[in-house]
Image 1 (cartoon, rainbow, N blue to C red):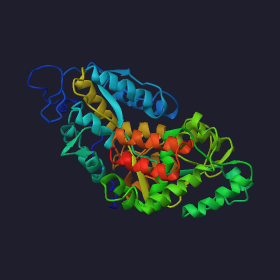
Image 2: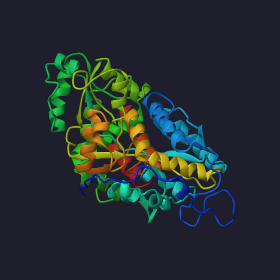
Image 3: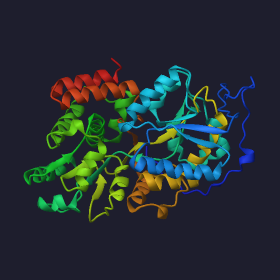
Length: 432
């Protein structure tokens, strides 16, 4: 399905005096559990649990906190950030706290299927009422709201939109390999020709890092070879994981991995991106949080780096979103509500996304407020076909992603061959 974002003027400021929802009938400080998403009670503070502990992510959080302080000066912000690549350490600690009935007031999670386990466990409140009260059903694109809705309820509020299918490149490395740094690659086969030339020049052709970055690469190859409908069908059962088209995609993924750096498993995404910044590698596939890393390093496009959709995925937006929740049993639900208001507001989303490299989820974002890359992302999100990211929790539940990640690690470290890899992926998707 193709969707278009229509720029709509919505009220940026919301009167705090009209934002109190009725607390639960028992009269305690916890939100109701009747599906209304109501939140009241103690707003003296809010513990915000994230994995935004360093780099551009922390800069984005700092920008949000500044707006939060301006909008809710009477609510104390408690930073619950936990360091760890892609949030793995934070998610482990969060699970421990949830199981001990000691939830933070709100926690970061990727919107989409990643939330399903929390929903099934009864650990999240329905915040649909806040969407109505904050005007978010109009402020957010309908397609996004639909993707956030589970059985008629919404369990998180997105702070941004990221794109996972971006290919970054070093113009200096490409020129050294005899390539035009401004060239566009329509297909994976076109890209293979360029990768061969970079490899022959003595540079790393394609930088990659630890397993989750390899899964990010895998999903873009699946999108390129299967198309948007075929890729989405992997998650709703309409595409056969054992089919020949998937075999073709896995063959292409295997070939791409042959161009990568041998130290990949000991690196995380900033290290792989740094290889582009330092002129050590020709290409890198990474979500657009990498844009903030280039800016932080003082690099300018197109002189110092270039970007385009991963070959074969032009016209498709591989979507993920950071979002925040209202956990059942939150000690300060009023504080949570204040935080959700700020992260969904025009001011909050503008400040946060300018620092983080992503784009606002809101329809009324002003492109001129953002970088050149972000302006292209805003335009693409408005017109491209949207699909959900696997590596970042939007396409499949956590258990499925973990199993796919394990299978990918086995394959890329040589512990399984392509045929076994395909079987392992099919089993993972089937929950076996």
